[in-house]
Length: 339
Image (tube, rainbow, N blue to C red; front, side, top):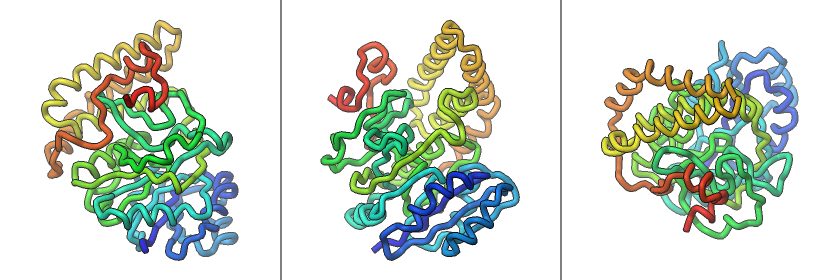
């Protein structure tokens, strides 16, 4: 039986913890610990959790280090086989860890895993952040079974019966072998928000491990708490961090042939926003590209210093162009794409 260290990063999120932490503490599993990584909250988080859930291990930091920094710092205190990074706005089902335990026991080559992620406010629909596991197209656009761009599917158990490995697991509920997480250096803190988990999962694949989707483990994610959908800041991080991720992890051939195309697709997206009257989105994409190129030397050093190989074949990477399939052919579900 695997032990799980559940790490929850929070910053002034007491309102979420009051709603969601009780379900985590009520988990029906004999071997787990909960580590609350508090990024210098000022809303009484530490006092409330200490009083109501004294079993929770609380680690307080001197500043707001965000998702990446908070998780990396809390990981040093994890004592179990598996680290499970859980957002503070996630409700879990009582037996969720039992299914994840079976996933890691069944195959030693599984390095990371994700539960089924449903929407907290519409529990019969998949949730945006991870749905039924993540994939990526040839130009680095991420999508999920159950969610393609902004199109969310209703859960008819259509993805429950296929025992399938995925490309990336959502950072809202990401389980990873503890020694592997430390070996890979944790989350890249330059990402700050968004796609840091996809970058980590790409490195998991490159290290020779699989990433698995576990539908018997069910969680419900509220989502949109830190950066609302469609906000210019969210657009900025999505575009900038995608470029960071691709430059770090693409093979040399992919970098030469595919990266320039991705830049052109971003330019098209920016002008589409401009001509639609969305000036703030246009500005966010332009700013993302400016900051990427200003940081290119630093990103290149990470690429050059990485000792992890870049295999040509990785599960969950598709060779189609997602934007073409979605916007031109109207293929808005995973089953439409996967044929």
